[in-house]
Amino acid sequence: MGFGFHIMKAKTHKGTVKRFIIKKSKKGLKILKRTDGQDHFNSRESGNTRRNKRSDRTMASAMTQTILRSIKNY
Image (cartoon, rainbow, N blue to C red):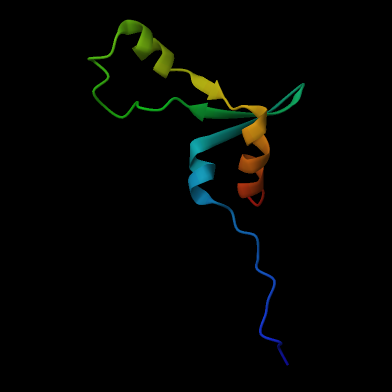
């Protein structure tokens, strides 16, 4: 006796899970992302660029809610 509509199950966005790391800090949640462009050809980059690529970046608070919404079931 279905009426033809179902409530969809919220699903985790797998690509977001792979790209972001969620850490708990004293101020709340902190979302970290690896720096872009690290695949290959890093030897031609300047020393400063190579060193900066090694670190993770903290995401802006505006993006935090969007990211958490897409991985809330993880």
